Structures are given as C-alpha cells and as structure tokens.
Length: 328
Image (tube, rainbow, N blue to C red; front, side, top):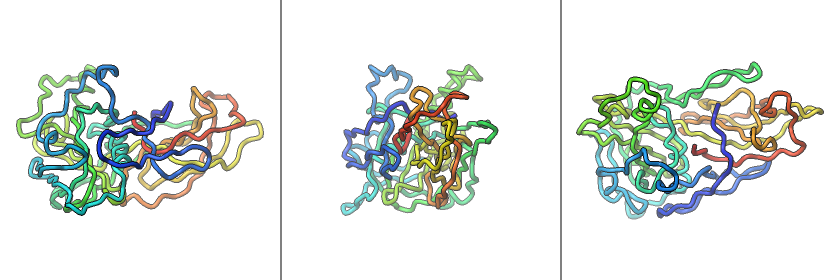
C-alpha cells in the first residue's frame, strides 16, 4: 500500500531556487507540482535526532542554491559550478520536491530533511559513460505486493539511467543511511560498524535534469549503507507521485466508480483506487514513477474506485487530492 498524504503544504524554500510548486485542486487539476511536505523540518521539534548533519565536501561545494566548487566523488561523478549564462527551465523548488519524494538505494524514501542534512543546488554533472554501459535494471522501488478486489498490483520498473555529460542539473546530496537504520530498527543482523569506508562520505546523490525535470539519476557511494563495499552504484530512483484523475462513471448506489488517469510504461500502482480512509470524500491516485525520458509516453487507463472500507458508500461529492510528489 502506498502511503497517502493527509494534507498538502506548498513548499517554502530558503534557498535561491525560484518558484514552481503550484496549486492543484478539483477534478481538473494543474500540471504544476505541489510538494506534500515542507522541505526542511526543525529537528528539535520534530524529534528527528537519528540523522547526523551532512558532513564532508558537499557542504562547502554546494550552498546558496548552486554548486560553488568542483566536487568529484569516487572518480565516478563530477559536479561543477553552473556557467555564468546557465538558466534552469525547470524550477528548483519542483526538483527539490522530486528529490525528497524519491527512493534511496535500499528502497526507503529520502523524505523530509532538516536544513543541515541536505545540500541542494544547480550545477553541471558528468558521469563517465563506461560506468553506465553495463548497468542492469534493478528492482529497487519501494516494494509492495498483493491485490485489491482480486485486481493485482502493478509493479514499478526501473530502467537504466540516462547519461550526463556536462549537463545542467539540480543536485541534491543526503546521507544514504537507510540500510543502517533499517537493520538497527528491525533487529535483523545489525551492522556493527556502520561507518563507511574512508574513501566514501556515504552520500546519496540525486540528479534532476534542469531543462525538463526528468532523467532522475541516483548515485550512491561505496559502503555498507550505500553502494557495494567496493564500488559506487547508479540507478533511476522511484518517485512517489499523486497524479490527476477524472470521474468516468459511478454506480447508482455509489458502491464504486470508474476513474481515468495517466500512467507511464514504468509506473507502479494499485489495481483498485481507494478513497481516503479518514476523509472518504478525498480521492488520490498514487503511483511509483521512475522519472526518466525512457519511460515515456504516458497512456490513459480506467480503474475501479471505491471507499476504503469494504461495503461503504462513496460520498455524493468527491474531492481531488493535491497532485505532485508525495514526501513521506
């Protein structure tokens, strides 16, 4: 089951990123993205004390909304400052929404960050082509399975990453600690020394094309919480998205309805859409989407929609959940 938002808070940036997270309500919704959570939380009030502040060269190389100094990681990823005349056609606020809603190498989401746990800005990105040529698609989406009313879940597919050769992009760097935290919390074979190798800062790097907002690439440094012990890894992260839908028909007794929405060939989604359990009038369609041009184009599908509680009736008036990346 994909997590569902209870409210939408339009993103408020303290970085020099520009606008771009618009409103999207009602049956006919805007194509603009709306972040489901503010990007930065106060760690003192939120109880977020598990993550340490981001350290290492990323904190000095990226600040004030841009890459300021060259940064090379593992001889595999090069970040450079933008050129003087560089302008991003895709808003940095929307790109940050997508990064926060994307998956880490172990499947958990980046999620909400504090101001001191993420470095984010505009820069030029290069990945040696030979590091991508042997990449095999990986199933590193947030896994969920099963069926609803006998209709099976559709799983997301992760294609190979697109190359970056000095391409202008939005870059987000966070600590890639999902595996360490999972083991510690679950009690399954805990990592006794979660400290990454000396050559690694245990970064998870997320790259978003600054022209289109597509071709997301996730880069994980070597280490027990990121890539393998000896080499970094590249992949296409899965972004949790709420997509627009339209009402097609409704049963006279309001036991169910048919709604239409657009999905891509790589999207994952549930076989039956359920209205919000706490607010039965609120309907959102949530997909797991690898945002890359190789997964276009989208196509229209029609699915059954019903109340979250079996046997319950749909309200006479249905409300559209906000659209855009969902940050858990």
